[in-house]
Image (cartoon, rainbow, N blue to C red; front, side, top):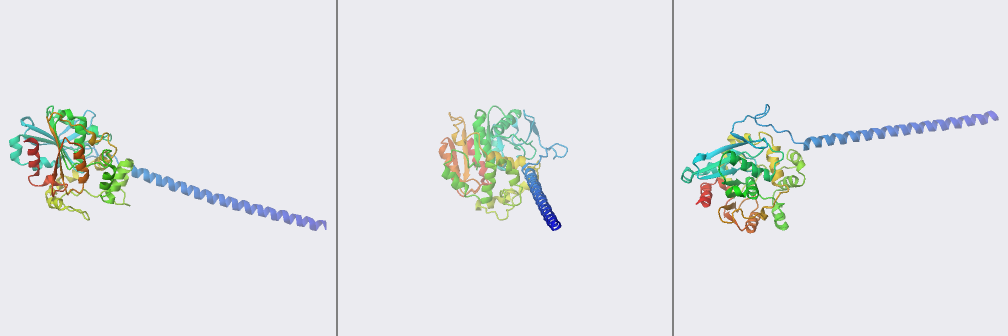
Length: 382
């Protein structure tokens, strides 16, 4: 009897022990599986974070004149902060000039794209004594990048260029497209150095506070969706600009349709601009130089500065020539699909001292039209 009881107890103890061992194994197995899953998730998150970080971090620019960079072929000045600015001179000799201009190129361009200098008739240049200097904006072609580029710094770069070339106490500034934004900064920060200012189809910033919200919103949403996103990223998340414009998942900013005179696939051209495309074929000779130091410090930096939070609102500027000793002019085509006509008209209405010239039947590339730049320069000087 006692032996049977003992045997039963032993069997229960053995069963209990077996159950505990099984549970321990299950718990250990569960912990191992859970640990492996957690570690896998951590590794994946770290990998994703590393990829995102690598994508967000812009590549280092290839500085002109450095061992792994492009050669320096243009004359350059050295600015106070140590950067170099490449330039190109046009027109009559500097010392013999009666009128001196500093030309500011647009987006995805360089000093060779001084359309006014290139298309002015020789008669106008000689008869009026016109000298024009164009330069590569920071990061473009052969000018050193400026990671700290601001609107004010751009104006001061122009002032330094004028001083080192001995253009005199006053000079004209003229800017096309995104170069027009730089002209606003000249009016803001160096008005005492200006004889006059010309803005040709100047690009606007949809976030300038002077615009009525409904007007800027309406104009903004008339753009292609891919352009809306590119500008939205540049404005709200500038640190993502490099990644956004190099990723392959979503459509990026449309190509500049004035690249080399060849129509860009699936890009709609207004009739006036399409007719002018052949005149841009000459850009093929220097297009490779434009982004040779890298896209981030050239076109991407342009987007960040041009469509970021500005240090001032152009619509709050005061007349730089209160005594009519100079003038500010804006030319704009009424078929421009790059810069909204409605916003340009509003700026002209707000700034009564601006001479606004609206060109019927003209697109964004109107300066390339035959005789156009002759008419512009004569309107300002004569």
